[in-house]
Image 1 (cartoon, one colour):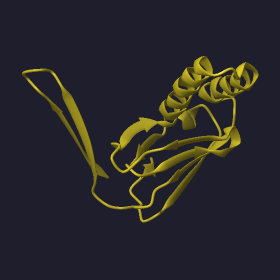
Image 2: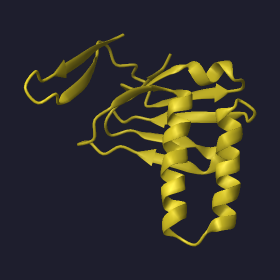
Image 3: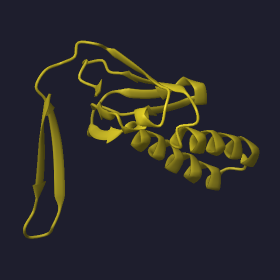
Amino acid sequence: EAILLSLKSGLCGCRATEIYPLRESREKVVTDEINSEKDLNKLVYVSSGSRVLIPELKLELELKQIDKGFVTTVEGILERFKEKTEYVCTQENVSSECAELLGSLEKAIRGELKFSLIIEDPFGRSSVF
């Protein structure tokens, strides 16, 4: 349970979104097994200061305290990882590693790869619904 506050300026069109959990889960580590394409639609709330891990793919996303938390789906998290991986692959000469990781990410996005989604949250506010 959370309050989602979304604001839009009538003058400049700027948007701001804030998420306020109504309760803390108290769980510092949230783990969810993603076994099917249906699991990709699960909603995920990642609060500021958290780390998102997919150990099978050796992926990690760390939000600093100043970063905003976000709501997405498991598929949305995979898309974030894919986008960042594609960017890194264009900056560095690691083509074989990149091709392998991007292939695995594509399989995961299609629901063809089972993996664990782990969120480490020092405040216990993150959740998978």
